Length: 163
Image (tube, rainbow, N blue to C red; front, side):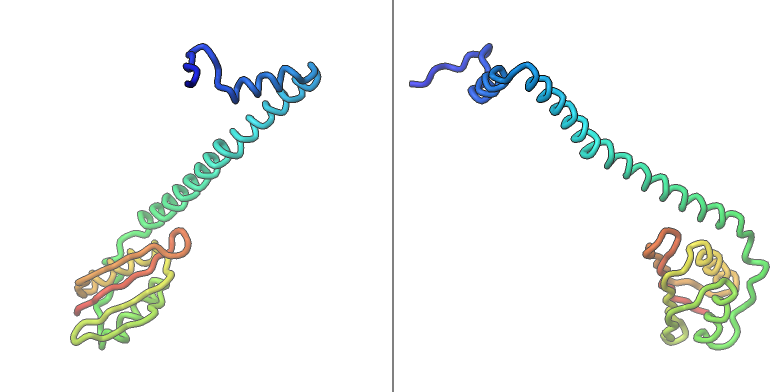
């Protein structure tokens, strides 16, 4: 039969550790306490504080990139006044208009009277005015898909344009 566990008695492992620690000289006990303190500080720093500080720095960088893009979009001004109508076939008119915004379409695929335009790795603050310019030129954007690019402020776009 096992002996009952008393609430005021420590576990056998803790008893063994306490006995081992008591068997050390006073100098060794001080060194072990200092080593335990250093180990605790290292675990707190490397396991908790450093990851939190890294996450904070990453978040601050993302917020700064977002604010930069938002300032550029807000200060870009109206697009409608400079937008000219699309003239000619969409396969040539869309890349010509996109070039005025600094955008080079990766592909323009005609689909009947419409066209699907794909743009890769373009700046977001150039894409939004370009899309507004397309609409201001009389084109209808029946579907727009904007995905995050490989870097902050860069997007991949797929647009279906109808005249």
